[in-house]
Image (cartoon, one colour):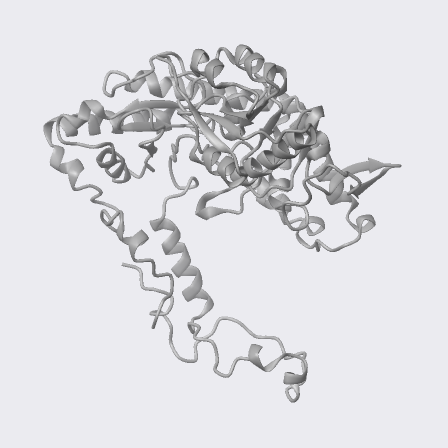
Length: 480
């Protein structure tokens, strides 16, 4: 077991040199109010550089990450992040910028942001894109605020948002946070939007339909043009949750299938790392009617210069300090430039092939509630293993013993004992075959030796944790 950094501490040991104080030692209380001055030194560990490096390297090998092994987290697109992205963000012209610099001193950065927005417009079929939002859910909230502003400008803010029963939970949260009542739209027997139910619920009080396409079952909404017609016939907005955009790059443009808004997850589709909670990167694209409501500032090109434009009277205002997570955008920009249009299309083609290969290979061993071909991800069910007393949770825990991160489980909610698997395009045939072999072995263990699964994991730094304890007994302060 790895000791904590405090347990490694030894009095007098250090791995740094603190620069000389650039403030007068006497009279400092005149510069800094007394209530902000520390009376006792901070309780920090005393460790050498090698102590620190070895400690965190050891911790990194205990944790699972996409650089270490397969990470098939459904609906989250945990693809490998190319290291060239990290090299580019360290260019001094990017890493040394200050957000309060004047426009004329950051022309390169503004050009990159402007070009990135144009690339996303081309990819999605939108007319304008903002890169202010910090990540997907923040983009959703921004989109909902724009929808409210749009309908209010037309004289009726409307009161309802329609959301399919297979949707991400953030869709309902974002809509509710903006004051809307959410109405659930049922899925049909094929796992797609029930058109009859949509027609029944779509009225003049519906502000928008919040739709994921491909949906969280990994299925393309084949009646998307009909869906668009129904929503627009009542003056509603069609919003695309872009979490699953990895299945559409170069294949389908959202704007050409009737969507009015789409949010991007730079930390999913465009390879920006997002393990450990961030930083993510968002983005929101809008069709012409909604462009006036985009948050300010907007980057424009005027007279050969790139400038921040705030002259947008219908804007919902800024939604992020400065202009979003800039270095996340630099990473995504690098990814797009490295691949080009043909490369981006290949991303989705390979992601779709990989997902279907996994699905068909595992179909004989796990239930497949929706058997049609999928897009970038597939959803299996552990119901077959349930009769042996094994839950999907047990399957997920057993996967950890083989050095594979568990897929998303128990989501989407419309699939009982769901196993939601997204391989992404960055996994090789050999990697997929290994995963298939492990999943088949686990299926056989569930039937012949279920106790192995019920007590898993066996080979991880810690065994199965209490699922509720951390939430009920929150303790984030280390006490020596």
